[in-house]
Length: 224
Image 1 (tube, one colour):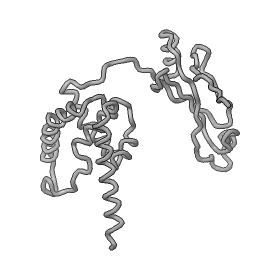
Image 2: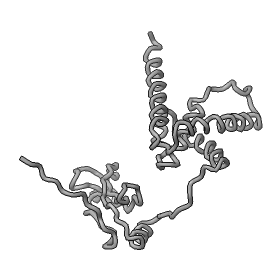
Image 3: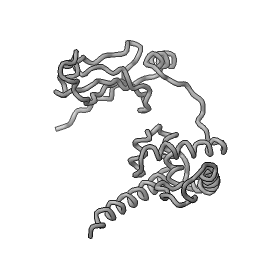
Image 4: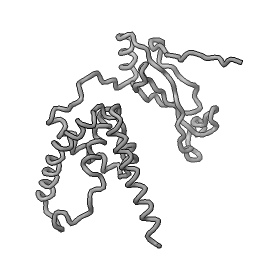
């Protein structure tokens, strides 16, 4: 009976990972690839990944024989799917680690191993413009004449230690808690362009400048 809680937790993790894998494969919008193409990638890149993984194991001095350690918690199929989701949507390693029930370092290592295999096959990210600062975003919107969605969000933070200068600057009058305000800019399709310009929670909302045209959704009135 002592092993039941551990076994139940293990089964929940296994079933959740299998469900996530099936959902990613079934919905083409997640990876941009059909299930047929995904199967071809697994069949083609899986043996290459295994071969290189074994080569890394035997290339260094070992205290135990190859294969004597713990088994992989993330099989190659999941490593491939995690890499594709990261490349397509920019999902963070922390989020992917929660999805697949592993540590963030496992996702980081998996992406570092699978991405070169995809690049050798010709699956690369097309070069494009990098908007590193708010000034870059404003300039890009002004030159392209595109519309941006501008908003801000409050993120709760720890209160500075007692006696620290400016301790009350982080108290937000809106949420009545210690917070920082962060500006978020997306294009009309909701793709993230910029996130930053963090300010203490006590400061009023700030606007980056008149060159950004904020897109506001239409207002609706209820009948009756």
